[in-house]
Amino acid sequence: MKPKLIFGIIAIIGFTSLLMYNFGESISTYTNFEKASEMKTAHVAGVLDESKDYGFSMETKIFSFYMKDEDGTSKRVVYSKPKPNNFEQADRLVVIGEMRGDTFYANEMLMKCPSKYNDAPEFEKASQS
Image 1 (tube, rainbow, N blue to C red):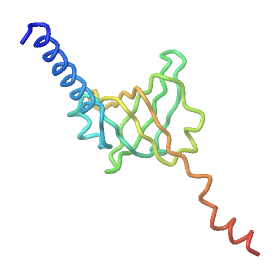
Image 2 (tube, helix red, strand yellow):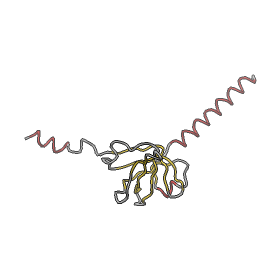
Image 3 (cartoon, rainbow, N blue to C red):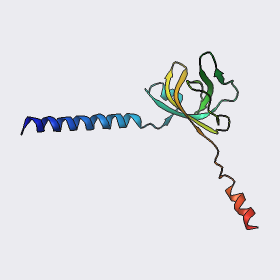
Image 4 (cartoon, rainbow, N blue to C red):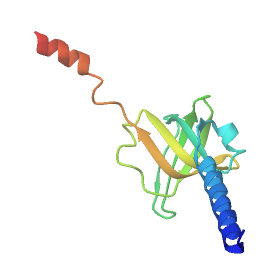
């Protein structure tokens, strides 16, 4: 075999291996705060802990709040962007980031809002009358 062909095959195998490794790292299932402390990047799902304050600090430009994970553990979440518009309407939150000590630092946040189609059966009953 020619050296160029061997080098090309090795390069393709190396690139494919790197791609598969990065793809495996990016796929994440929802976890809790306890397991998130053992991970480099975690997706934690939960609800806003309304018993504690939340807000945006103009000095630090950070939005922070407390969130209860699916196990009921409440932790402080620091989000380096402004508060999302529909934050209060969300019935479930998903924060993506990492645990540092007792605080979760979120790079991204997803809000799962109640569906506007939840009242569809009532609408169907009204339209049938």
